[in-house]
Amino acid sequence: MHIAVIGSGYVGLVTGACFAEFGVDVACVDVDSEKIARLNRGDSPIYEPGLDSLIRKNLQAGRLTFTTDVAGAIKQSLVIFIAVGTPPLADGSADLTFVDEVARTLAQHLDGYKVIVTKSTVPVGTGKRLINLIKTQQDKPTEFSVVSNPEFLREGAAIGDFMRPDRVVIGGADPEAIAIMRDLYRPLYLIQTPFVITSLEGAELIKYAANAFLATKISFINEIANLCEKVGCDVHDVAMALGMDRRIGPKFLHAGPGFGGSCFPKDTAALSKIGQQFSSPTKIVDAVIKVNREQRLSMIPKIERLAGGLAKKRVAVLGLAFKPETNDMRDAPSVDIINGLVERGATVIAYDPIAAEEARQLLPEIELAASEYEAVADADVLVFLTEWNQFRALDMERIRKSMKTPRIADLRNIYDPVSIREMGFEYVGVGR
Ligand code: NAD
Image 1 (tube, helix red, strand yellow):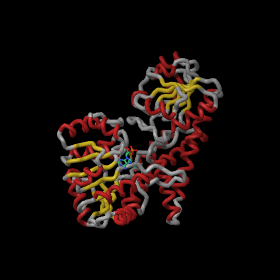
Image 2 (tube, helix red, strand yellow):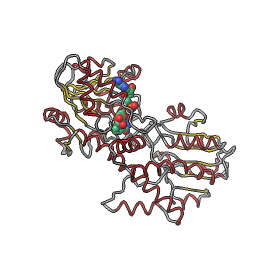
Image 3 (cartoon, protein in one colour):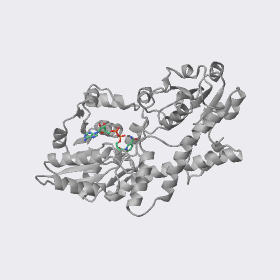
Image 4 (tube, helix red, strand yellow):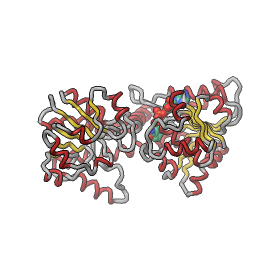
């Protein structure tokens, strides 16, 4: 089967490379010609473990191609995935400019029955709207179906998540399109992956509901963490005991500076807008968003208290990406927190193993160090902002000696407060 994936970002590239690995002929399309040129050299523009080798292998095998020729890719494909960005507008709703642009292009080039799949996260009602948009833009009507197939991959673990998902969700009304989608996903069907077949609206809402629920767990544990600090107990113990209850589960119960990244903030905001649009307010989601914003900003006075003021202080930050194993800096908590520190007069020197290049654009006022140890030299306070594995076993004795004053704000609760204090550090975590 030939398929096209329009939009070669995090989701489009992983989708394209993984389907090619399943033996499908895939054309990945993007408007960014530099990105396409890079990809044709086998060089991935994003950092995602395992993606580079999957791209190179399938390029060589001739199953994966990268192109800016959207018309050609549409013509040769039976299934066309839309995987372009749906960033937030100022009011929180999803910006569908890129999706609509693809729909208009599809209307021009459809030349026979095709299945058009929204892989992008799109508001409820988008699938039906796209059907009308394409129909009204077509000069010569052709048959086509629109299917929603939301993506649940996590950056940093995307290949494994795509190849071994908890479930595949397919929404649509046309049995032929559903059968084609099942056929495409056959390798997953063979490993007994559950398939949820539902309506277009059902699939669109499932994606937002899943992300909002995970974000709710994070805001919930952060609220409990703040209470732990007041009553004098450790959120680590509370979260562990909570997570042992199989009805709750241990995932997404890590207290910290709040959620960030390209999905949770924008998808919770968009779900809230969808609720308003359908006169069905999402009061819990609204509270999750508020708690998250306050949690992120409350990290600035926490660091300030530990440092005894921030004016003229040297703050070493370890970790900038919104989470480990990615170079994605979109809506990373580090950006707001570092900007707050700089506004209060601190000098920030930061180290991230992968995201330094991205950080240089977003945080031009900070210095970037070449290693953890270079960052902490002469620092008044050390702040952990991303829990990269390599930060878990640092030479803390060397760090203590090289800092001006040995103070740690561990916003990811990487270290054990008791042993780190015994080593001579002043230490604050989140909820401990
Ligand atoms: P991204 O910004 O990394 O990639 C989007 C790509 O689309 C870019 O390369 C851009 O150049 C390209 N593009 C824009 N307009 C185009 C057009 N008209 N034709 C061809 N290409 C075009 O975005 P992403 O992170 O991959 O997210 C894509 C969608 O998937 C979003 O809706 C997002 O919410 C959803 N999603 C993302 C993740 C994630 O972890 N990043 C997970 C699940 C779902």
